[in-house]
Image (tube, rainbow, N blue to C red; front, side, top):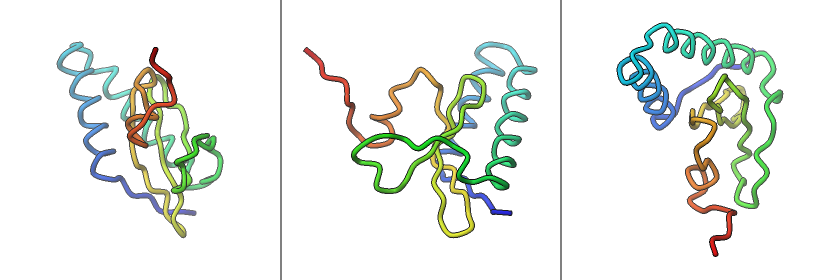
Length: 108
């Protein structure tokens, strides 16, 4: 079984998502459910670390993978026997720009 670590940005992502859902949307139950789903997804990754899909991008030298967790995507990479949770992003965000600092979308 692998260990896991949150990066500081991932911790901030999760905190911000939970705060937004709980306070801005006034839905504490949904925030608790998201937290439970995220922790369950991480538990599964510790058992099956390569189960997430690979992020297909030329700049993915770190080997990012992701799993879907409700409306969120958990981005991680594997380092030795540790699953490193890099980001937890809302699924409709431009994650390519957030992860790599650039977008593949050509603007006209």
